[in-house]
Image (spheres, rainbow, N blue to C red):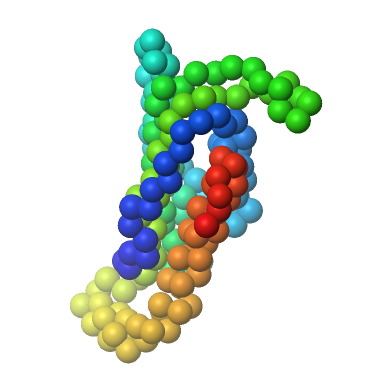
Length: 164
């Protein structure tokens, strides 16, 4: 495995559309042929400050028979309060609170089917990765890095932040 990104954090405080954020994020991954698994979803009881929501996504995409992209994303929302607001002349349900969106890691998994797990084939795999290290970086790791940056930008647009 080759890690491309670790711990990219987007922090936000204000009003946003929770449902839109969720739907757009799922759509973003679906449009890029990722299979998304939600491994954690917690909605903690309301307190005087609002309630908390945590959820973890694990999108994966089979790029080739040998290469797979694996991403882990963790969302934590605090002091969540839902309300109705008039946005551009339409009544919408919005959420006010703090959001911390963390791309925990994004990695390229080589030989994800363990086809090169035997003694001789394992040595061949090590030789191939050493010999073609730059090729693998350009062909698979750079595109994953760019996808994560695009995902970050789309999250910032959904939250109406300056996408930089």
